[in-house]
Image (cartoon, rainbow, N blue to C red; front, side, top):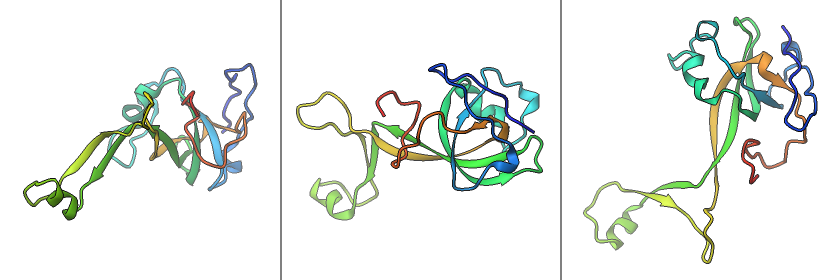
Length: 157
């Protein structure tokens, strides 16, 4: 089964990838179609259908590093990792920090944003997300994938 040719944002054409040519450990561009028919996509390992997991991401384009391939699924599927960046941070306090703040013993989490002094912008932190997508959505990267994985959807990357 082949993915179709998809025009890229800058007028480039993305390369065609056949499921037998997909390699574990390689990073590919993924384009989620604008419309996902609910009946066409299988239930994922989490118990939710793929449609439930991806319906709010229709039309997105991002980098995915393939971790597993299931060529016998219908449609053939790949598992992979997507790296996103978030300005939100959550840190668990250790016992010494809890005591220094005068809090009763227990577990506490500090949540918020990290901002450099004299700046209005937030520091961005990488977050890895596991995903499963049809192999036909993969195509060769239209631009080089950076050595440090960043979200290709993020215009600030």
